[in-house]
Image (cartoon, rainbow, N blue to C red; front, side):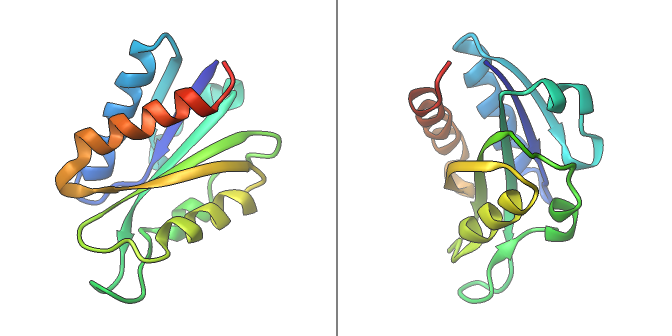
Length: 140
């Protein structure tokens, strides 16, 4: 299986999560490419069996949460025919960010298998859990 992780990060937390997820997948023998949304590896994206999309939670503390820089996510390359999973990082409450991110990725044509929120003060364990869930759920 080949995986590409595309992320949008503001403070580095989502990028850190992407790196940890990539390390976990690579350690399990999965060919993995990690790239920010502003520098997508188009060949890796084309070759990928699974696309992971990550972003941060934007909005007020308890209301109006949404995927960070959603316009950039909506401008991602078309993902028609691709399987995808998503994650978002958050500080206090992710609200409906994950559901909104799933909708954006589905609008790009991917079949989203699921997703997970990762609290910013628990990035390492959260990213590891997300990677483990992916490895269990996605056929090799």
